[in-house]
Image (cartoon, rainbow over all chains, first blue to last red; front, side):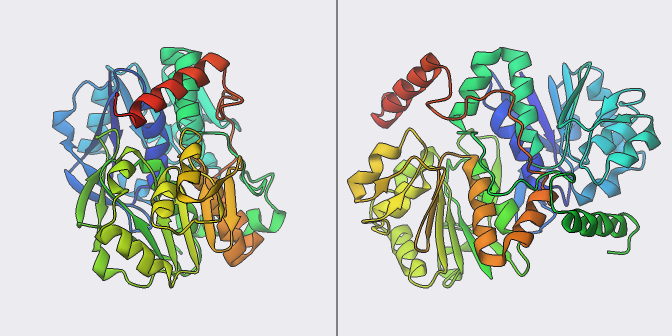
Length: 214
Length: 214
């Protein structure tokens, strides 16, 4: 079972690593990091570099596609080789997945038209532009398309999908192995849970980023 | 504020990336991945490669040290340049931290003697060998030493430490930014929560790995 994780410059590392540490631990899984160019790709913060080992034309039939998000997503919304590759491999995947704004890349490629989906909470309102229906759920299954909310949600997505693929016991074994028994010190991980002023400030910041002002 | 994340071959990626995506988003943070050699380091699963940009002698005064865990930890339990570096930089850190079996590296360097600490649940019983007192907590603060439990716990540790360093509002802003509102599909992330037979099987596997049989 080949899992292809797509990387690009200015991706968010945890978006990619949540699914990697869960789906990548399934029995028989073989994970490959793929991109338009091979070599080191820098994260949104600039300080982490993750390696792409396979060019697009070397990965033609992954069973699972994982598309992470991050600020670099905005440079991938035009048609081109990457989008063609996504459409081509999607035709053969068992599961096509995304974390965070990775869903906007899938949506722009036309794969989420008429489907329920999610994204980072700051990007949810962009899904309808591409004909997708945003939901407030953290992990959304619609047929073989699985989209997750912001950044850290890829862990929950990976475990939920691991359960669908290999059964509850295997998924629980993976969860115990990565000791995923979350105990956040605050209950501020969603816009309706964080203090109002924090959500408002971040929403304004997100608007400015999208408008190219920040 | 410099954050040094120590990498080595066969580390667990999420151990490093949980703190990276939380502490690394603190205002003024500058994160550097450091190791005995620069260049690509492969994870325990082999398929992820993360880049070390700075050799040990290039990072002499980090404010925060982060030591991740992973199977490669077992090769680092002898005295040598790495341990000397850990002791040297620890003398100047504001916070010395670990995730998962990274605490065994700190403990073997003599830094956790007489201190409360934690580690991956399968490794907790090794802490007393080095004079540390294991606890059942997910994140343990003892003076400037902060140790976290297995793999995914580095996210909780990073947020808790972010709060100590920069205050609750900053930590909550980071939490909202990475949408850390965990919703695991199972409640199996700790040995006393997972189904008994899954915990027993993994405990036996862990014993075999530590004995060099697996």
